[in-house]
Amino acid sequence: MSVLVYTESEQGAFKKTALEVASYAKAIANELGTTVTALAINANDTNALGAYGTDKVLNVKNTQLDAFNANAYAEVIKQAAESEGAKVIVVSSSADSKYLAPLLAVGLNAGYVSNVVEVPSNTNPFIVKRSAFTNKAFERTQINTEVKIVGVSNNSFGLVESAGSASAEDFTPSIPDLGITVESVDKATDKVTIADAEIVVSAGRGLKGPENWGMIEELADVLGAATACSKPVSDLGWRPHSEHVGQTGKPVASNLYIAIGISGAIQHLAGINASKVKVVINTDTEAPFFKAADYGVVGDAFQVVPELIEKLKAFKAQQ
Amino acid sequence: MKILVCISHVPDTTSKINFTEGDTKFDTNGVQFVINPNDEFGLTRAMWFKEKQGANVTVVNVGGAETEPTLRKALAIGADAAIRVNTPAVDGFSVAKQLANVVKDGAYDLVIAGRESIDYNGGMVPGVLAGLLQANFVTNCISLEIDGVSVKATREIDGGKESVTTTLPLVIGGQKGLVEESDLRIPNMRGIMMARKKPLTVVEPIDTDVETTSVSFEKPAPKGAVTLVSSDNLDELVSLLHNEAKVI
Ligand SMILES: Cc1cc2nc3c(=O)[nH]c(=O)nc-3n(C[C@H](O)[C@H](O)[C@H](O)COP(=O)(O)OP(=O)(O)OC[C@H]3O[C@@H](n4cnc5c(N)ncnc54)[C@H](O)[C@@H]3O)c2cc1C
Ligand SMILES: Nc1ncnc2c1ncn2[C@@H]1O[C@H](COP(=O)(O)O)[C@@H](O)[C@H]1O
Image 1 (cartoon, rainbow over the protein chains, first blue to last red):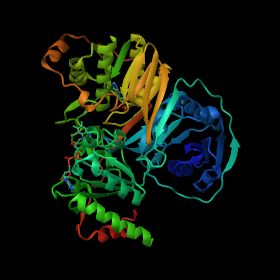
Image 2: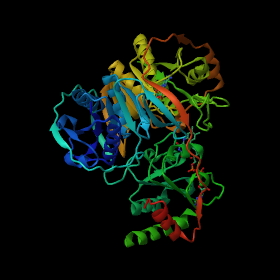
Image 3: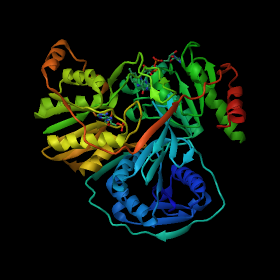
Image 4: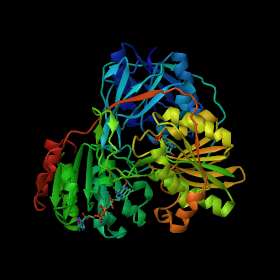
């Protein structure tokens, strides 16, 4: 009956989102008066989950699962849910979790709700609040099925520590046909991804050309941030598509979003609105972004950004 | 190759989002509806398969008669035929069930859907459809090539991309990258005229469960005014971000 949470890892280490979904699972388990079981696939330090409320970890070690495969991972989570008799399954909003969740939903005849931003306001009936219309609104959705899958929106719940330790158990699932073979992965391992970043530094057409991105990358470096851009910047080929954020690009839900030379079109704002604190740097006081931002600097990026980098370096040195 | 492109009919990206009936229904008043942008990339890629590889392309929507102009637009862009399953789209699961029935009936080899619809952002229809059909599935798909039944695709992952191989039958969740923005087509006069003569078949729904029910909507709390910091006092910005916002 416990709540099952799928805790993602990368090269053996839990991702930050894993600790967030574990925290979330603990909160639901408290409401339901039950315990939390985590499923970890090829993770090393499964003890880490105890500090976020997990009671038991099911450890899967299998080289067939070294590369992510949505079918296989969904099937493994399904078997874990069945063996635990779990009625609530919690997953993150990472690209991989969003990929496997609908397949898991079919496997378990479970209702799945994505982009959930809070613990259920009610568990009988089971009603969750999710973001919809690309952050322009929230929707309350009731899950009618006996087994329920909750996809938690990144950075919406945060990490909640709770004293405790998790027991570990080996879990040996049977692996289905993969269906899909990964031929190659092209991923910068030294960069923070937009999905995981606490801070995102984003720039727009106001930067005039791709040759001017040096200072954006430097600012991101100083802050340990991911870099992002507006749609025209990726359409023009100044930056890769993977950096395009907004309604038709990636969603951003960071703690801090810094927009430089971005006007703040409705489609851009829609995608980044879930960020907690927004800063705009723009020469034009009339730019719509000033209405959406918490802090604003009216000024020329080519002057403001290098100076801000110096100030931040000085601040970091003091810390 | 028979391709089915799933089209969701969504409010234009500039739409103001409002609700009616005690915040339980999306207010369509004054809202322009368009082909979901992710589906438009998929439809355009399907046109490439039609023109270069002789594929036959059908578009489908699960929805009421109000979605027909959107389907006609897809026909004007070049799809060969359209199907509308005559029932309101109430949840991702039931929509996927209806679509699975259409796929089985028409024996499609490839189903192109979007990564997510920009209205409800469910991101579940293509995956559930693939699960129901026991077909292969690639989402966040940014490139797709097909040779016989062999498929090469690229999927966007967090922080990069992944190249995969698989086989038909296949369902994809597409997005920008499948084709570029500049490849998108605006229907021309000839396309619009031809679209009028193409078949738009209305089929009745099958019985299905509804797994999730929308209860109500709310808008985010209004935001306070921006705090302006002078460009020659950036120390203050750093201090505000540290002491007030507590984000650095
Ligand atoms: C269907 C559809 C979907 C879309 N989806 C997205 C999306 O997902 N994401 C997205 O971003 N856009 C999207 N757009 C595009 C959106 O409407 C805007 O065109 C786009 O966001 C504008 O990008 P920008 O702010 O970089 O450029 P601009 O609007 O050209 O703004 C540049 C800004 O830079 C400022 N500036 C100029 N020089 C300087 C300087 N030296 N220092 C500081 N500031 C300076 C200017 O004052 C201006 O405000 C979409 C549009 C459509 C129609
Ligand atoms: N009512 C519908 N009719 C046809 N296709 C749909 C419908 N709803 C969703 N889809 C398809 O599924 C994709 C993902 O939608 P969603 O799961 O609602 O985010 C869309 O981009 C469409 O391709």
